[in-house]
Length: 59
Image (cartoon, rainbow, N blue to C red):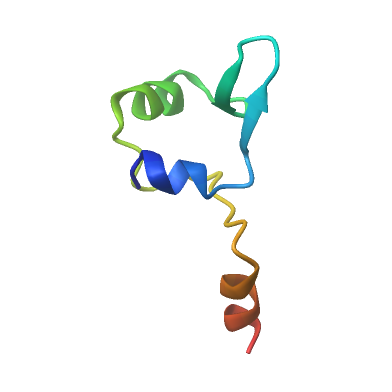
């Protein structure tokens, strides 16, 4: 999973206080390290916001 995949995740929200996009999940230390180093291929919190992907999965 790369940074562009994070941009497609429902948990990737704009933080008004920080004025940037952040992961909205409460990550533990290991998950935060993976997120910051870009080694987050298997993010357990990833939720696609692509409605077509959800519909294809239901068929």
